[in-house]
Amino acid sequence: MKRFLAGALCVALLAPLFAQEKTSQNSEQKNEKVTLTVEQAVAYAQEHSRTLKSAQIDLEMKRRASKYGWNVLLPDLTVSGTMNRTTNADSTWSSIVSGAGMGAAIATGATGGNGWAAYANGEAAAKAAGMEKNESLHWAAVGKIGVSWNLSLAMIQGIRAAKANYEGGKISWEQSQREVSTQIRKLFYALLLQQESLKIQKTSLENARQRAVQAETNYHNGLVPEISMLSAQVTYQNEIPEVETAELELEQTLDTFAFLMGYPVGTKLELVGSIEPTYIDANTEDLLARYGGNNLDIQAIRSNLDLLKIQLSANNLSTWTPALVISYAWQPTLAPYALDFDKWGTGSNWTDKGALSFTLAWNITNMLPWSKNRQSAADIRANIAKLEIALETLLENQKVEVRQTVDTLNQAREQIVAMGRNVTLAQRSYDMSARQYRNGTIELLDLRDREAQLNQAKLGQLSQKFNYISALMDLEKALNVGLSRPANAGAPAENAAKISTN
Image 1 (cartoon, one colour):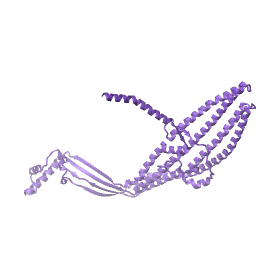
Image 2 (tube, rainbow, N blue to C red):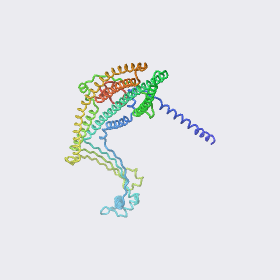
Image 3 (spheres, helix red, strand yellow):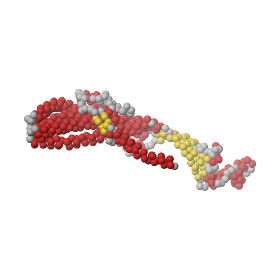
Image 4 (tube, rainbow, N blue to C red):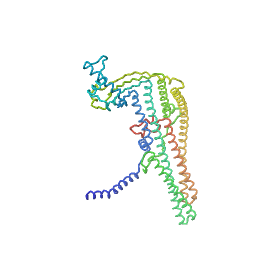
């Protein structure tokens, strides 16, 4: 007991230390930075995204339904056992007595004129044979094995519907993958844009700090008045909270991005990449001719149309064709004395009853135009008409979307080139103004204006590059094709649907 208590005390004292060490290790793991490229971010999101996990469960359900859709052709096999008690067993006892008496009379040759022995003789014979008027006389044991097979032409269409539903599920899964991929890529480049904006702000802050130091030096040397020194210091101090706010916003956005990809809360991300688009020569008519049919929304509507047509065919077959039911039932019965379990092992005590039936059933009510079955068929036809209109609308909308996106790409590309020249000019202007400010030939306000122009030019060019990348991803999504990257880039190797079609 002393050893046990000593061991328990040691465990109690050391457990918090181990728990603290484990917590410290987990904390270090959370604080460890994860470096990601855009392709790595997409790959991780497709593997860990909660949205895709839910969509994968839906796809697996439809896959199983398609794989085992033939199970509607399996017969129904039922096995049952029943113990039945009759309240009044007098008639049963009378039948036993009569049968026993008749048997005894035939055995002795004393059948009489009508072949029946006296009731007393029959009762004695029954008791001599082990029959008694007791509780077991009320009970009967009934077993049953039944097989039923329902056959209908509509079942074939049901199997086809399950397979068509699975094909539609694969399109939905591909849509989910494409949606996650596009969302992660856009957020990734938006974060890069936010990082570049922060870098520009930090550069501006450093320039303001250097100017404040220089203004203080010049003031002490008697080169500038005190107001110039104070103005430079105020400018520097005013930019500090702006940079700190931008840093906090970037950190919060990174946390949200990590959560969307499926990383644990608190994971620190470091994004590696640049906002440099891959330019393409886009022509609306050529793109629509080559990839217009790849659109996943269009494929989904066509898949739903096929499914509805199969359902309509199944409804019509169930209405206008009969169903064949084949059934067989075997029902062994032990009655009476079912409580005398020693009689269960004797086959002659059981009465075997079996029945085979063939039934051809035709529901006439379903043929009536106002019946529930025919109204259901009318609803299916109406939904088919609605989907055909939606398909036509989507095809036209795709043309408009692709045309507008191509125009956006071409415009963004032209503006990127123009803003590149503007950045070069603004940089030269700022460098010249900085030298003039150091020489004391221009005011601080003029230098700040040149710096603001330079920053605006840089951010403008970065924004147009982001717009080009974003528009290109929208175009790839609309056409379901990879125009600027390899097909299936970043997709998980297992259970991955086809992301882009070339």
